[in-house]
Image 1 (cartoon, rainbow, N blue to C red):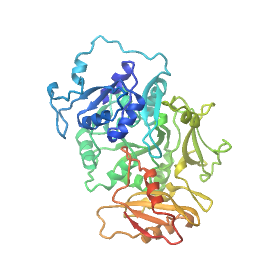
Image 2: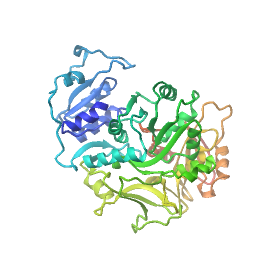
Image 3: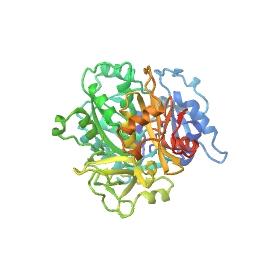
Image 4: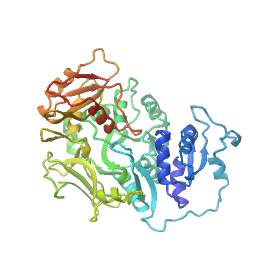
Length: 485
């Protein structure tokens, strides 16, 4: 996939990296939506790709299929002989490259605003949407990311972040720009990551907060041979997880971005004086999303009704809005959705709810769909989750609204527990723990224990699935009940 990040745009085509962990039905929907002419398929994905193509209606022409064979596949292997390739593939990737013109001159875009990539959102709150980015936007995003993260020349980068996720936040091109070495892995495994860090001298890696959680909770934690810079984004990371990860020798940087911005456009710029603070205070500060990067012209938190900036008091909720070259051109074939979030004055309304602190640092509190309104009070599920993550028995936590007969909505917590526990907490244990640390109206009234919380392929917890589960429980009454699923 790494070579294709360069080859497709240089041929004048638009690159669309599809999530390899999706099922055939979803992939078929995306393919029919974006109508690709050519589809490169990895050996391990060929069965799901062929199934997705089989779901095309008779009047819909499928793309031409090219098989990427990998002699290092650990599941099923592959042979270099084309005779072993399914006849539905026109050729292999290597044979296609061999037929190429060695004197080919790469096709320059007609304009810096010409499309370069199409990326689909992860669908944490709704169905995926196709996000179109320009050459200008992606170039700006790539350079911006390198500068903000202070990436030196010739880093060793471990790909714990999928390349299909916003083109690996644009570090696919960024690593090439600074002469970096890319260490690729099929899937995330904490033990493997620790081994690769030691073997290759890894200096940089990225990932969602779930990656930090898995690294810090792994039973096979190994000493790091050198400090490893790790950039996290995708969801507000709990301060407890940040603190645990940094205690292992990882240097965590935190930022904020969306598929619609092509990467991280808000960064928690660290101040030297903060190093003197206790570890818990440093973690709380680092959990904030921060200030705009140089690639983003403006970033603000505004009242959704008036459009005016909210008070810089760290508590007044508003919608996060962005303006700059990194913002997408729009959603493919969806002008209504584009016009809803992109205003004529250039502001992009993210749908994320946050606050602005007195020092100008913003902090995400929720997705607009995830704000819980209980008794007329808006409460942030993220704040409740941060408390839950501090509980010594909890591995993962997510909070959504559950209908309530009296309050309208009440917090419903879904949690998974750590594996090595000798005694598991009860629902009342969790509720009492929260009651000692939160205002009464923010305390979960229901706790649901799960072996594992539903996630997207990039590690984001799927709150829409949890909302459906909470609704299926029915309206809560004045007494909470134990739910184990």
